[in-house]
Length: 97
Image (cartoon, rainbow, N blue to C red; front, side, top):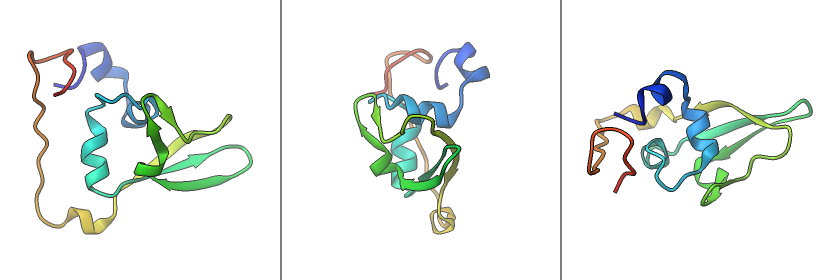
């Protein structure tokens, strides 16, 4: 139920993070799970906690020439159970509230 059918068929979690939209569906869950992103360029590889990667509305710490090559969630986050419930006025194409 995230995005339209077109987005569901071609989008990626990394693209959702790089967009840094305040309404991004994947960000809250990944923040709670202490996820980090791996950023690579032709010169270097670095890891950043997701909370340091997303700087604000449509703003990230992505440098020119870098791309997200991995999203890591610590194994300790796999213990227990969690859920994500999207609340909005319609089923698709809705900004989460």
